[in-house]
Amino acid sequence: MLRFDHFMAKANAAYYATRPFGADFITAPELTQVFGELLGAWAKVVWQMLGAPKDIILAEAGPGRGVLMQDALRVWPAPSVHFIETSPLLRAEQASRVPHATWHETLATMPPGPLILLANEFLDALPVRQFIHRPQGWMERYVENGAYAEQPADYPLPDDPVGSVREVNEAALDFCRQLATRGAVALFIDYGPATSEAGESVQAIRDGAPADPLQEPGLADITAHVDFAALLRITHGQGPVKQNSFLTALGLYQRSDVLARKHPHKARDLQLAVQRLTAPEAMGSLFKVFCLCPPDLPILPGFA
Image (cartoon, rainbow, N blue to C red; front, side, top):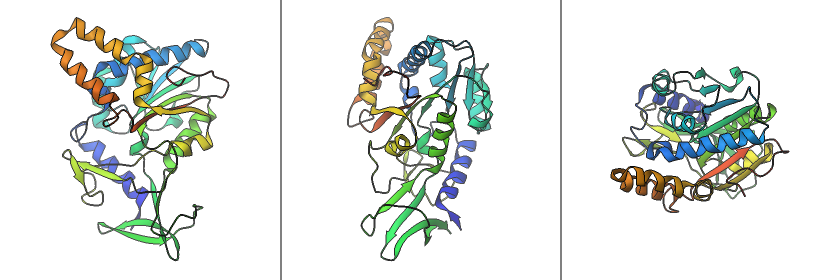
């Protein structure tokens, strides 16, 4: 019997170690090069706001195939690039696009110095603990033989109605605490509500379709909504703001129009990508942008 977050961590580690990235889903950097270029421009401006330190580190957590960083470096060729990635399969893909990067299993081995970190759809794949409120009190979910099991919970939780489910992402909270301790600026783009809410958000995608997260672990991508309010309670940050307002403020439409004029045969694809990134019924409202940063920084681009 495994506690649910341990089950999710083990299943996702197996999934990303064996499945081709993008086989079951598509992420924003894969839709259009403009996404990564805008984040590269954003990071360059933030670097300048930090005083343009020569020893700046540009890092990405969960970099997928390396597409986002490849596009970002086209705008700002940062001197030192680091990836946090555990999958050998994905490291090989990333090395083909950003061969001069340095790889890390965890944030702990990142060298000291000023750090700007980008993370698109990273926190949602970190394992969550799940609790359900029963008449006798809160119970924590475990997984046994492909089904949920429950054990009494020793964890401080709100007095939600019986039947309510709460998810706690301790891995995300710990990751953000480490970033805050070193004074990093970290941009997170992920999906989830702007306020902490009760509810079950864990989902699994296999072969492009919804799947049972408890069945055949390692063959499906398991994710959960990010609790941005919980991150704000333990760190200083800006946002969250909706992805559509953030990307629009950074010049998504203008840059896409420039590319469409230069490459007319790509105009339709660029239009569809912009629509998917900004439409409220697509990624525009569900996805949020949150920046963890030192409290002495002024309002950063996209968060006004």
